[in-house]
Image 1 (cartoon, rainbow, N blue to C red):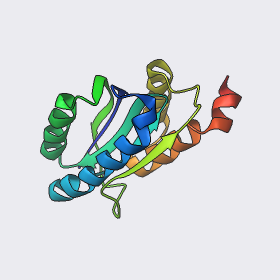
Image 2: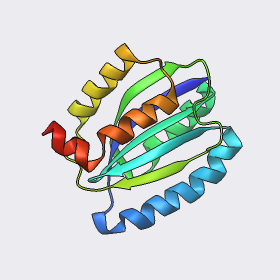
Image 3: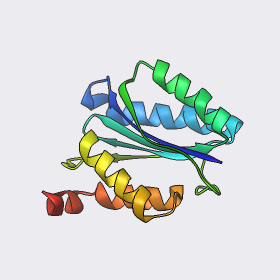
Length: 144
């Protein structure tokens, strides 16, 4: 089992975010189901943060498709590692649109991810909980 987390910049206007996320989630549920890939997609202030897990070859194929997708630019990998087991047994994709988060920068996310890798097991379910907490408005205000 493998885990990849990346951040990218959305190339579409902010007012299209909900429509784009709905479309991405709809297609991902079908395609990821075929590949036995699970994960979650966050969208905050024009940026994507995605956590995906599955067999490494399936994730490499998916990342190749994402890198070619014109809705993404400036893709940066945060985590690319083997994991003992799947963290999202019941999901194949979910998405969250979070607004007004001031902590969502590549540097901040890299620092948070490095802290996660040093202090917690590489479990995708724990990673998602970690990102959810850190990306909420209350936490963002507390960090600033």
